Length: 208
Image 1 (cartoon, rainbow, N blue to C red):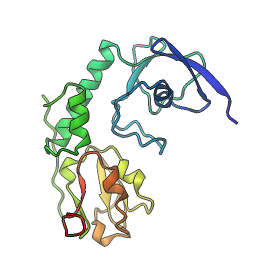
Image 2 (cartoon, helix red, strand yellow):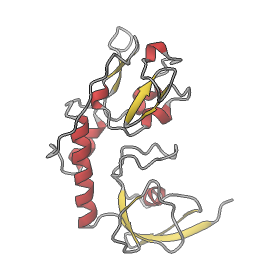
Image 3 (cartoon, rainbow, N blue to C red):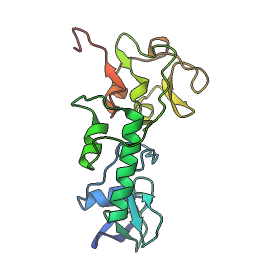
């Protein structure tokens, strides 16, 4: 059994197993931190950085999902600097994503919850050279926010990281292919994991 360590979050004390992250400790206290990349312990990568918090009065903010809890820590989750930093990150994410306007878009919902409905920034979103989808899954790479959730959700390593974005196919990180040309079993785990509507079930009588 792991040792229990105690720390203070927003002037409330809690105990968590050694090795737990600050995000897990905050959730134990029912403190909600915004996050797009976290998948409940599936190798969180601090890709979105929306879960920024302050530790022990340090001026440098840290990602709660990737920072281990330590005994005696004092953590603040919502001072004005933290809130301002999250809003800037949400604006940058929204600029990268664009505005798809879909009701099920987690990116736009989360940005709105932070008071961000439009972005001051512009991002260059390169259009893919070819369709990366399949008969089952549509891929809109322009909407991708590079959270890596689809990569971590895929048990067959069909989707991988290629520079700044994700690539699909049989030769990961070398040449972008398509799901149709890969070992994809069409399980749909990547579609359910995607927060940005970049991966969606292809309209059909079965999934329309």
